[in-house]
Amino acid sequence: MKVTVFGSGYVGLVTAACLADVGNHVVCVDVDAKKIETLKAGHCPFYEPGVDDLLVRNAKAGRLDFTTSAADGVAHGEIIFIAVGTPPQEDGSADLQYVLAVARTIGQYMTDYRVVCTKSTVPVGTSAKVREALGSTLAGRGVDVPYDVVSNPEFLKEGAAVEDFMRPDRIIVGTDSPRPLELMRALYAPFNRNHDRVMAMDVQSAELTKYAANAMLATRISFMNELALLAEKVGADIESVRRGIGSDPRIGFQFLYAGCGYGGSCFPKDVKALVRTGHEYGQTLQVLTAVEAANDHQKHVLFDRIQAYLGDLSGKTIALWGLAFKPNTDDMREAPSRVLMEAIWAAGGKVRAHDPVAMETTRAIYGERDDLALVPSPEVACEGADVLAIVTEWAVFRSPDFAAIKKLLRTPAIFDGRNLYAPKAVADAGFYYESIGRKTVGG
Ligand code: UDX
Picture (cartoon, helix red, strand yellow):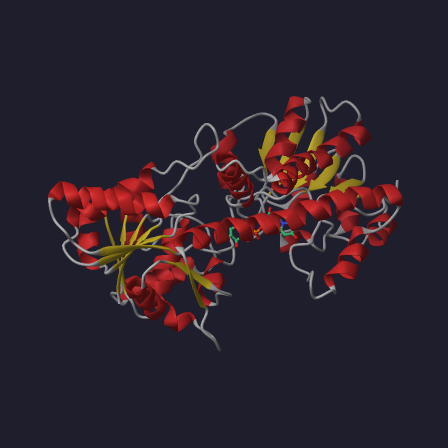
């Protein structure tokens, strides 16, 4: 099939590369000429395992093209995805100007039937606005070309986006008419394993499903984080509690890990957006309001503990393992590491950090500064630091040489925001060890 994807960001490129890989001819359109050049040269503008290979392979095979020409893009794809950014505005609501600009552009160039598919994460009601913007542009041209607007939210996890796209749990297609549904079913047929993964529903339900999924997952995490704080007080171990409840199939094991708070481009933004949608419609979402507050609190827990342990932080250096909001990504959006670093700096301390891929992103955010050293290995981060804090569970941090680290740190103390180690093993290695929702040991 012929597909066009507007927006060569994360969601757009993963979608384009995966759709091309199953044989579709996909054209990616972006207004950023530099980005299009980069892509044409075979480079992916962000870090995501597997995407580079897919881009190169499918471009070589002639199934994937990149252009800045919106006219060519609209002429090409019978199905057109809108995957442009929806940056948060001052008040936190999603800025829809880019989405609606694409809708108008499509209306400007369209001469035949098109299915316009919103892939960007957009508030409930956006598809109706897209339909309106496209329709009024066509009316302005004085032409009557048929089109349908479909909501097709993505459920990609950073670091596993290709796998998530290729092996989806479900494919949500929100539409009120059979014609686009048939086309979308055909487009996604290669991704049906064992059974049909397409779930058809009305547009509003599709839009709400996306938010509901992320909000539910965020709720599980905040619930476990609060319970972890209680577990510490009553002398319980959150890992035992997690296993104990996760084995109930109604609860399940996933997304029950207590830690130093959730970050990323989706959970924080989507929880906020859903709370706001509630307000707009006169419905207070009390649970989600609490989910957000609990997460904000959780992001400060490590700092409070380090400060309680070290006292005055001025002149002190904290070794930091992990910067990205989770492993296998260089994404620093809403990362717990930022809250920790900024609190350390505000208290007069310094940070020596290592992350396998997110150091460039970190430098781009904070620039060169005296109180931040970005160093090439976990060990170097510990050299001359007072204590060690861990905020991202990269595989490379999982079995460190404790004896070597003990020699490098001024004080053998570890503040683990991801519960990476068995407390007894760390205590036996001679460390003071605080983790989340488990007994503090050593020291
Ligand atoms: C999420 C959704 O999982 C995905 O379906 C949606 O399309 C986009 O948002 P992503 O933001 O890439 O994906 O990361 P995810 O793996 O879900 O993790 C989000 C955050 O929650 C991370 O900061 C992670 O560390 C944290 N987390 C996750 C926990 O603290 N505990 C858990 O048990 C799971």
